[in-house]
Amino acid sequence: MKKIEIYTDGSCLRNPGFGGWAYILSYNGYKKEACGAQENTTNNRMELKALIEALKALKEPCEISLFTDSELLVKSVNEWIFKWVRTNFKDKKNVDLWQEYLRLSKKHKIKAFWLKAHNGHEENERCDFLARSEALKLQKSTEKR
Image (tube, rainbow, N blue to C red; front, side, top):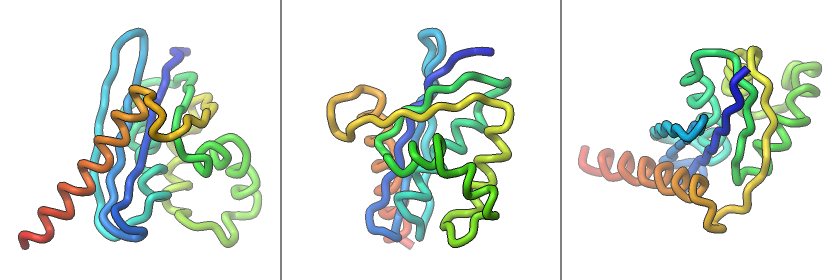
């Protein structure tokens, strides 16, 4: 099983508002990045969307080290999701995205790690820049309509 690193970030100009997500996949010196945006979303949805999109990019089962500045995402992936499944996501937000995460994550081994935001970590800073840029780009494009 390949060991890879995934770096993610989500951004939201208002909460809710224009949001952006970004990820970087890192394997054996190779890096792939992607980003996108959505209207009327939240920061937490964008954090999770970044992870989902990263998982979609993987072609085979992997051992994943996930790095994010979202403590909520780290605790959700490492601990809370198992209880949520047992309680059928009772009183939880973003159930649609968590169910998609579960479907995509089944074939992988994932361990999440927290990074302090805006602390000079290269991949975290890059994801932050990409996510925010996508949200701003979407906001500007809708203002022109």
